[in-house]
Amino acid sequence: MKDETFQIRFWGTRGSVPVSGPQYARFGGNTACIQVQCGPHTLFFDAGSGIRPAGETLGPTVDEFDVFFTHSHYDHMIGLPFFYPFYNPRTKVRLWSGHLSGWLTTAEMLHEFMRPPWFPVRLDICKANLECRDFASGDVLQPREGVVIRTGSLNHPGGCIGYRIEWDGRAMAIITDTEHDPAGKLDANILALIEGVDLVVYDCTYTEDEMVKRRGYGHSTWQQGVKLCKAAGATRLALFHHDPARTDDQLDAIEREAALALSGSFAARDDQVVDIEPSAKS
Image (cartoon, rainbow, N blue to C red; front, side, top):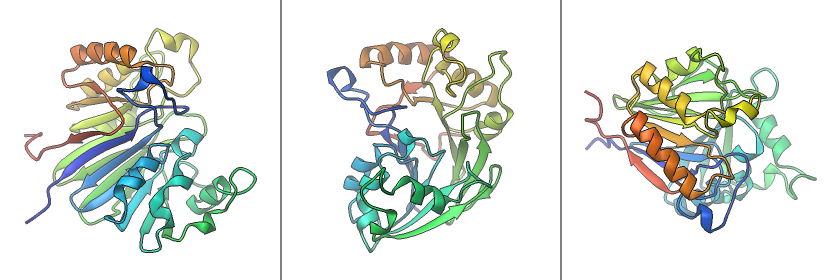
């Protein structure tokens, strides 16, 4: 039988830096890592601190998968050296990046990130079969049979890539990190990536009131996420890349506001699983 599974698991939903403490117990404190299951194919997007528990759960059960980077800031890569499958010689991993196209290849980026004096050992210590793939913004990727991934540039210091993942007639998009136009113009790249998708994972680090003092940081708001989803006919919004100072109670309040503005909106939590059913779109 055909495996129609299209499932998203949030392993890390924070931005900037991991946090811990009772005030973060419900939403979690790990930084960006999302697992997308397309039938038998396992894809990871970003390798923040959330990829460490992901690797422990994955264990030896999955021996071939892909990792896509939105960009290479610390909070989106810090978990990579602690990802268990990297040290398993039976594992095959393809690693993809496009935000540094023309500047650094994916292999160069990884070797620069994991080396002394910033880390005690080099990438060579990883015994898995690592294959690095490069692409440019706007490329359409087909990493596995039946999986189509569309890419586009986002507005973030140092560059960033947004992804649209299409599988079995359904689609979802990962749009983090990005800053919106204060004049209200909607980003054409984002609109193209999220048009008609079943789920948009969007950078909701701040609120519109907070943006007054946060211009230039490269992040957005849940209010802008709602506007984009409505304009593009996207079904659901997942608030993502939470400010590390944002407590559970504060995220609860923001989640309620977002759900009133766009039905089905929710603030993503670490270890949360979301299924996109075949019947989700008519």
